[in-house]
Amino acid sequence: MEKTEPLIIYGRNACIEAFRSGQSAEKLYLQENVKNGPLLTVQKEAEKAGIRPEFVSKERLEKLAGSKNHQGCVMRLSAVTYAELEDCLKIAEERNEACFLFLLDGIQDPHNLGAIIRTANLSGAHGVIILKDRSAGLTETVVKTSAGAVWYTPVVRVTNMVRTIEELKKRGLWFVCADMGGSLMYDLDLSGPIGLVIGAEGEGVSRLVKDACDFTAAIPMKGDIDSLNASVAAGVLAYEITRQRIQKQP
Image 1 (tube, rainbow, N blue to C red):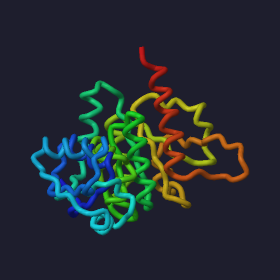
Image 2 (image 1 turned 45 degrees about the horizontal axis):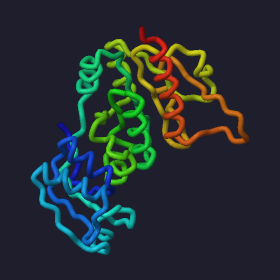
Image 3 (image 1 turned 90 degrees about the vertical axis):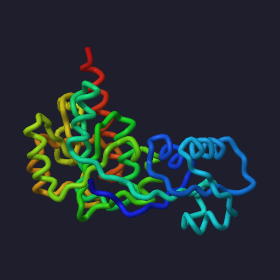
Image 4 (image 1 turned 180 degrees about the horizontal axis):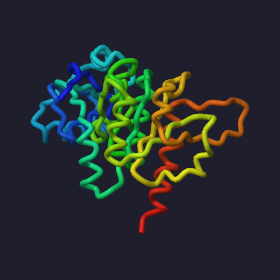
Protein backbone atom coordinates (compact mmCIF):
# COMPACT_ATOMS: atom_id res chain seq x y z
CA MET A 1 0.00 0.00 0.00
CA GLU A 2 1.11 3.53 -0.74
CA LYS A 3 2.19 5.58 2.27
CA THR A 4 2.84 9.23 2.98
CA GLU A 5 6.06 10.63 4.36
CA PRO A 6 6.22 10.87 8.18
CA LEU A 7 3.78 13.50 9.43
CA ILE A 8 3.66 16.02 12.25
CA ILE A 9 0.05 16.54 13.31
CA TYR A 10 -1.39 18.79 15.98
CA GLY A 11 -4.68 19.65 17.61
CA ARG A 12 -6.57 17.71 20.29
CA ASN A 13 -9.13 15.99 18.06
CA ALA A 14 -6.59 14.95 15.44
CA CYS A 15 -4.28 13.46 18.09
CA ILE A 16 -7.03 11.74 20.09
CA GLU A 17 -8.55 10.12 17.00
CA ALA A 18 -5.11 9.11 15.72
CA PHE A 19 -4.54 7.10 18.89
CA ARG A 20 -8.06 5.65 18.96
CA SER A 21 -7.83 4.48 15.35
CA GLY A 22 -4.47 2.78 15.93
CA GLN A 23 -2.20 5.06 13.91
CA SER A 24 1.54 4.45 14.20
CA ALA A 25 2.56 7.24 16.58
CA GLU A 26 6.25 7.76 17.24
CA LYS A 27 6.21 10.71 19.63
CA LEU A 28 3.75 12.91 21.51
CA TYR A 29 4.55 16.38 22.79
CA LEU A 30 2.25 18.06 25.32
CA GLN A 31 2.37 21.58 26.65
CA GLU A 32 3.90 21.67 30.10
CA ASN A 33 1.92 22.95 33.09
CA VAL A 34 -1.42 22.55 31.28
CA LYS A 35 -3.86 20.02 32.74
CA ASN A 36 -7.22 20.67 31.06
CA GLY A 37 -9.68 17.87 30.27
CA PRO A 38 -8.96 17.47 26.53
CA LEU A 39 -5.18 17.27 27.05
CA LEU A 40 -5.65 14.72 29.83
CA THR A 41 -7.69 12.69 27.33
CA VAL A 42 -4.82 12.91 24.82
CA GLN A 43 -2.40 11.76 27.50
CA LYS A 44 -4.65 8.87 28.51
CA GLU A 45 -4.98 7.67 24.90
CA ALA A 46 -1.20 7.92 24.49
CA GLU A 47 -0.61 5.78 27.57
CA LYS A 48 -3.01 3.14 26.22
CA ALA A 49 -0.91 3.07 23.05
CA GLY A 50 2.32 2.74 25.02
CA ILE A 51 3.54 6.24 24.16
CA ARG A 52 5.05 8.34 26.96
CA PRO A 53 4.46 12.05 26.24
CA GLU A 54 7.20 14.62 26.47
CA PHE A 55 6.17 17.86 28.16
CA VAL A 56 7.59 20.95 26.45
CA SER A 57 7.08 24.69 26.36
CA LYS A 58 4.40 26.45 24.37
CA GLU A 59 7.15 27.95 22.19
CA ARG A 60 8.59 24.51 21.43
CA LEU A 61 5.14 23.25 20.41
CA GLU A 62 4.71 26.23 18.08
CA LYS A 63 8.03 25.41 16.45
CA LEU A 64 7.19 21.71 16.09
CA ALA A 65 3.73 22.38 14.67
CA GLY A 66 4.69 25.40 12.58
CA SER A 67 1.56 26.99 13.97
CA LYS A 68 0.25 28.67 17.10
CA ASN A 69 -2.97 26.69 16.79
CA HIS A 70 -1.58 23.46 18.25
CA GLN A 71 -4.05 23.33 21.19
CA GLY A 72 -1.30 22.06 23.47
CA CYS A 73 -0.40 18.84 21.66
CA VAL A 74 1.76 17.77 18.73
CA MET A 75 2.29 14.21 17.49
CA ARG A 76 4.78 12.65 15.11
CA LEU A 77 3.45 9.78 13.00
CA SER A 78 5.68 7.38 11.10
CA ALA A 79 3.36 7.46 8.07
CA VAL A 80 -0.25 7.43 6.91
CA THR A 81 -1.36 4.67 4.54
CA TYR A 82 -3.56 5.35 1.53
CA ALA A 83 -6.33 2.85 1.00
CA GLU A 84 -7.25 0.74 -2.04
CA LEU A 85 -10.55 0.89 -3.92
CA GLU A 86 -11.40 -2.57 -2.62
CA ASP A 87 -11.19 -1.25 0.94
CA CYS A 88 -14.04 1.19 0.25
CA LEU A 89 -16.20 -1.43 -1.42
CA LYS A 90 -15.57 -3.84 1.44
CA ILE A 91 -16.75 -1.27 4.03
CA ALA A 92 -20.01 -0.78 2.11
CA GLU A 93 -20.49 -4.55 1.90
CA GLU A 94 -19.80 -5.06 5.62
CA ARG A 95 -22.33 -2.35 6.50
CA ASN A 96 -24.82 -3.84 4.04
CA GLU A 97 -25.17 -0.42 2.40
CA ALA A 98 -25.21 0.82 -1.19
CA CYS A 99 -21.71 2.13 -1.87
CA PHE A 100 -21.25 5.90 -1.54
CA LEU A 101 -17.95 7.44 -2.60
CA PHE A 102 -16.55 10.95 -3.04
CA LEU A 103 -14.34 11.47 -6.12
CA LEU A 104 -12.31 14.69 -6.12
CA ASP A 105 -11.19 15.87 -9.53
CA GLY A 106 -8.19 18.04 -8.73
CA ILE A 107 -8.87 19.52 -5.28
CA GLN A 108 -5.61 21.31 -4.50
CA ASP A 109 -6.42 23.27 -1.35
CA PRO A 110 -5.58 21.06 1.68
CA HIS A 111 -8.19 22.87 3.78
CA ASN A 112 -10.86 21.95 1.24
CA LEU A 113 -9.64 18.37 1.10
CA GLY A 114 -9.68 18.05 4.89
CA ALA A 115 -13.15 19.56 5.11
CA ILE A 116 -14.47 17.22 2.40
CA ILE A 117 -13.04 14.13 4.13
CA ARG A 118 -14.75 15.28 7.32
CA THR A 119 -18.05 15.67 5.46
CA ALA A 120 -17.58 12.28 3.78
CA ASN A 121 -17.18 10.64 7.16
CA LEU A 122 -20.18 12.37 8.74
CA SER A 123 -22.47 11.77 5.76
CA GLY A 124 -21.76 8.04 5.79
CA ALA A 125 -19.57 7.78 2.69
CA HIS A 126 -17.38 4.71 2.37
CA GLY A 127 -14.32 6.44 0.95
CA VAL A 128 -12.74 9.40 -0.81
CA ILE A 129 -10.85 9.12 -4.09
CA ILE A 130 -8.27 11.73 -5.08
CA LEU A 131 -5.80 12.13 -7.92
CA LYS A 132 -2.09 11.48 -7.51
CA ASP A 133 -1.29 14.53 -9.63
CA ARG A 134 -2.85 18.01 -9.50
CA SER A 135 -4.30 17.28 -6.07
CA ALA A 136 -3.57 17.83 -2.42
CA GLY A 137 -2.51 14.70 -0.57
CA LEU A 138 -2.69 13.64 3.08
CA THR A 139 -0.70 16.39 4.73
CA GLU A 140 -0.61 17.81 8.25
CA THR A 141 -3.11 20.51 7.22
CA VAL A 142 -5.52 17.95 5.77
CA VAL A 143 -5.36 15.85 8.94
CA LYS A 144 -6.00 18.89 11.15
CA THR A 145 -8.87 20.22 9.02
CA SER A 146 -10.54 16.81 8.88
CA ALA A 147 -10.69 16.74 12.72
CA GLY A 148 -9.45 13.15 12.66
CA ALA A 149 -11.84 11.89 9.97
CA VAL A 150 -8.86 10.75 7.86
CA TRP A 151 -8.28 7.96 10.37
CA TYR A 152 -11.73 6.46 9.70
CA THR A 153 -12.62 7.28 6.08
CA PRO A 154 -10.38 5.55 3.52
CA VAL A 155 -8.59 7.87 1.10
CA VAL A 156 -7.55 6.33 -2.22
CA ARG A 157 -5.14 7.89 -4.73
CA VAL A 158 -5.57 7.06 -8.41
CA THR A 159 -3.76 8.12 -11.56
CA ASN A 160 -6.78 8.42 -13.85
CA MET A 161 -10.22 9.50 -12.61
CA VAL A 162 -12.08 8.54 -15.81
CA ARG A 163 -10.64 5.04 -15.74
CA THR A 164 -11.57 4.73 -12.07
CA ILE A 165 -15.15 5.81 -12.80
CA GLU A 166 -15.44 3.26 -15.59
CA GLU A 167 -14.07 0.54 -13.32
CA LEU A 168 -16.56 1.41 -10.57
CA LYS A 169 -19.46 1.52 -13.03
CA LYS A 170 -18.78 -2.17 -13.63
CA ARG A 171 -19.29 -2.64 -9.90
CA GLY A 172 -22.73 -1.06 -10.09
CA LEU A 173 -22.07 2.56 -9.15
CA TRP A 174 -23.67 5.58 -10.82
CA PHE A 175 -21.92 8.93 -10.90
CA VAL A 176 -23.13 12.47 -10.37
CA CYS A 177 -21.01 15.59 -10.68
CA ALA A 178 -21.67 19.10 -9.46
CA ASP A 179 -22.36 21.50 -12.34
CA MET A 180 -24.40 24.69 -12.58
CA GLY A 181 -25.82 23.57 -15.91
CA GLY A 182 -27.14 20.29 -14.56
CA SER A 183 -30.54 19.18 -13.34
CA LEU A 184 -31.75 20.45 -9.99
CA MET A 185 -30.37 18.04 -7.41
CA TYR A 186 -33.83 17.46 -5.90
CA ASP A 187 -35.04 16.09 -9.26
CA LEU A 188 -32.42 13.34 -9.45
CA ASP A 189 -32.58 9.88 -7.91
CA LEU A 190 -29.34 9.74 -5.92
CA SER A 191 -30.34 7.00 -3.51
CA GLY A 192 -28.51 4.01 -4.98
CA PRO A 193 -24.82 3.08 -5.22
CA ILE A 194 -23.28 6.41 -6.14
CA GLY A 195 -20.10 8.37 -6.62
CA LEU A 196 -20.22 12.11 -5.97
CA VAL A 197 -17.73 13.94 -8.19
CA ILE A 198 -16.47 17.36 -7.07
CA GLY A 199 -14.28 19.46 -9.34
CA ALA A 200 -11.26 21.64 -8.73
CA GLU A 201 -11.51 25.03 -7.10
CA GLY A 202 -12.41 27.61 -9.74
CA GLU A 203 -12.32 25.16 -12.65
CA GLY A 204 -14.96 22.62 -11.73
CA VAL A 205 -15.09 19.08 -13.06
CA SER A 206 -12.93 18.49 -16.14
CA ARG A 207 -14.71 17.76 -19.42
CA LEU A 208 -13.59 14.14 -19.70
CA VAL A 209 -14.64 13.37 -16.14
CA LYS A 210 -17.97 15.15 -16.62
CA ASP A 211 -18.61 13.13 -19.77
CA ALA A 212 -17.98 9.94 -17.82
CA CYS A 213 -20.63 10.83 -15.22
CA ASP A 214 -24.25 9.70 -15.52
CA PHE A 215 -25.82 12.85 -14.06
CA THR A 216 -24.96 16.47 -13.45
CA ALA A 217 -26.54 18.06 -10.39
CA ALA A 218 -27.13 21.77 -9.88
CA ILE A 219 -27.41 23.27 -6.41
CA PRO A 220 -30.15 25.92 -6.20
CA MET A 221 -28.70 29.36 -5.58
CA LYS A 222 -30.57 32.55 -4.73
CA GLY A 223 -27.75 34.99 -4.05
CA ASP A 224 -25.80 37.47 -6.12
CA ILE A 225 -22.81 35.26 -6.85
CA ASP A 226 -22.89 32.03 -8.80
CA SER A 227 -20.52 29.61 -7.12
CA LEU A 228 -19.87 27.79 -3.86
CA ASN A 229 -16.61 26.77 -2.24
CA ALA A 230 -15.75 23.19 -3.29
CA SER A 231 -16.07 21.77 0.22
CA VAL A 232 -19.41 23.54 0.78
CA ALA A 233 -20.78 22.23 -2.54
CA ALA A 234 -19.63 18.75 -1.57
CA GLY A 235 -21.46 19.06 1.75
CA VAL A 236 -24.71 20.27 0.18
CA LEU A 237 -24.80 17.45 -2.38
CA ALA A 238 -23.62 14.82 0.10
CA TYR A 239 -26.50 15.54 2.43
CA GLU A 240 -29.02 15.47 -0.39
CA ILE A 241 -27.67 12.00 -1.17
CA THR A 242 -27.89 11.10 2.52
CA ARG A 243 -31.46 12.42 2.75
CA GLN A 244 -32.57 10.34 -0.22
CA ARG A 245 -30.85 7.22 1.10
CA ILE A 246 -32.61 7.60 4.46
CA GLN A 247 -35.98 8.07 2.76
CA LYS A 248 -35.48 4.89 0.73
CA GLN A 249 -34.76 2.78 3.81
CA PRO A 250 -37.55 0.30 4.61
